[in-house]
Amino acid sequence: MSVSYRQPGVVLTDRRFTVPLDHADPAGETIELYAREVVAGDKAHQELPWLVYLQGGPGFGANRFVGRQAWLGRALKEFRVLLLDQRGTGHSTPANRQTLPLRGGPARQADYLAHFRADAIVEDCELIRRQVTGGAPWTVLGQSFGGFCTVTYLSTAPEGLAAALVTGGLPSLDAHADDVYRAAYPRIERKVTAHYARYPQDVERARRIADHLLSHDVVLPNGYRLTVEAFQSLGILLGGSEGSHRLHHLLEDAFVRTPHGPALSDAFQEQVQGLLSYAAHPLYALVHEAIYGQGARPTAWAAERVRAEFPQFDAAKALAGDGPLLFTGECVYPWMFETDPALRPLRETAELLAARTDWPRLYDPARLAANEVPVAAAVYHDDMYVDTAHSLETARAIRGLRTWVTDEFEHDGVRAGGPRVLDRLLALVRDEA
Image (cartoon, rainbow, N blue to C red; front, side, top):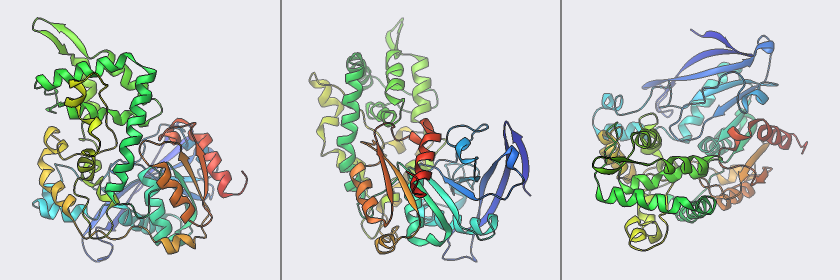
């Protein structure tokens, strides 16, 4: 039963759908999906075209907006919007350390999670679309990993799309996870270098924190073991529009004086555990590299293996000299399943996913080359999360796709500049720009 309620300027309706776990076995096990329908209050009874939003991640539920925040206000001028919690996230049969043991042991859990990639998400969308639109095609807005799903959508079910909009999420069609991270580490280093140029005082602050962690066993209040590698992973902030400033404010308040000498402050530890914990989005860690799996080659902890090719990220070596400590970002490492209490019970499951060799193909280059769906993509110059060169190569491979390449925004541009970003993409798909 759907429940409707109001926020300022909008009417919201909670909707739930039942879909197969494995779309190749429609009569088999099912899971429940949740989505929030949003419509402008003054248009609640109008027939409007639909826009479905696919969140970034993987592993994050759809935004919980209040009213007409970010890009939503622009979308509501002409669309009825569906904010979908992708399978395993939010209210959609969540997958985490508490629920996954219901599947059985690690092997059963890994087999289950193999159904939580872009191909299954697209098939979910198609079942939902037929129920909510009466069969009419809809517009999809895909942010980051949601953009990856959108390219899969164009590959497998373009008949369901009236238009496709992508923000910071054009994937390589054929790159292995190794290629993705081999391109990522130089981008991350550039972001760190730019951060230190903006805040040169942070060079010494970061070195001091790292040196402290190398000589002290620090366990955060939630049980997270803060190693120097975990501290370095805070560089994931640097891919966002305010990330450099947030990292700076975090570093400047790291230490307090105590009777036993300097220690990492409670305030610092509280902030750090919120940034590092995967308790709210464990799927990000579990299937992050699996989203690149296509064919028989395993992902095999690509970020960890490729990191060895970039010795400048070795904290101990940096501290032995006088160079800056380099942060990392947009990487999942096997040690996270030891340091994070939300992930520890899932370590063996993660190992099985990393070793998996039967990943279906996610993209169809021939079908994309013959694409007839209007498509526009915002590509952020030197995006830390998604390689710009890979994105532009894919843009050239999708017939009719129009790009807006900009350095005005970072990877979170659809949040930071939402109405303007959405306006630009809609104009591109309508040949108005």
